[in-house]
Image (cartoon, rainbow, N blue to C red; front, side, top):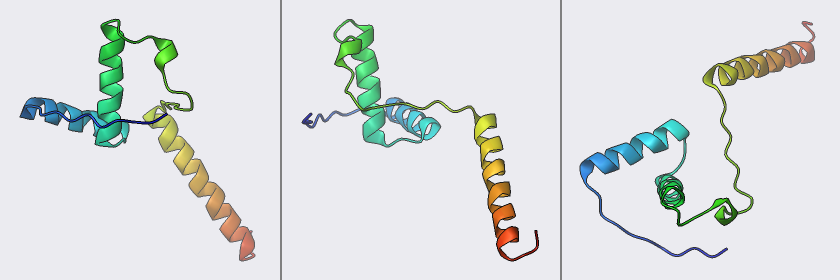
Length: 88
């Protein structure tokens, strides 16, 4: 799917809200604007679920799960390291 460039100007409040949206989701500003445009078009009835580009998935991971998963990976790496040096 080819993409065309869309440019706009926005007031400071809108820019700050987009920045907050990007930080909360860990995405680029371009991706944030794409998602927000799609959501707005869908809400106003100009877009339906069949318009969603194929191959784009969104993962929603709870912060607790991310924290616990990170700790478990860290422990696994530590155990592997200790076993490699012969301490386990």
